[in-house]
Image 1: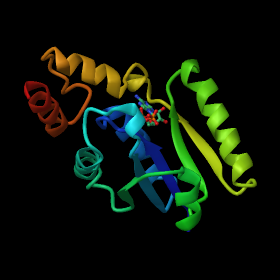
Image 2: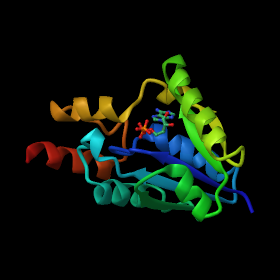
Image 3: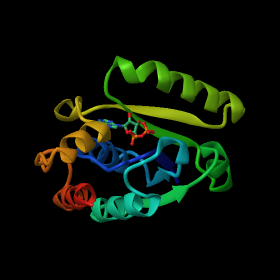
Length: 160
Ligand code: ADP
């Protein structure tokens, strides 16, 4: 059975992420979306909130689940018998960083873990969680970029 993990911060989930999730769900038997609990990044939403929104957003996919994890991704993967990482590539600016991570993961895992890159859907090439947060912080309608319930969560977050 093919099993892949799609790790990220998802602060918050956007239609760009959902495009990658949808496409990987048709490529693998099981896709696990891994929400990174990385305190260094100082996220807008807590891990629980990000996981909640993702669960709501992926509920139409039978073979997609959402987990939160701390620590090293490849340790989690080894423990759970996952050997493929899915990442999205938007532009060349993503490439250098992603290449470095993919190669080091391969090295550290002794060639047992591989990374699969999905190039972004052209409609979402410009889209990032940080752009969505920026717009939402000024009260701009972001429903073009994220599901409605995420837009509402952003709105109430910035009202606080
Ligand atoms: P990270 O903090 O790990 O970069 P993100 O939540 O920003 O986490 O992104 C998770 C993954 O989704 C990354 O592989 C990123 O390149 C990809 N991604 C983000 N936005 C898009 C998009 N608009 N289209 C395709 N892939 C995307």
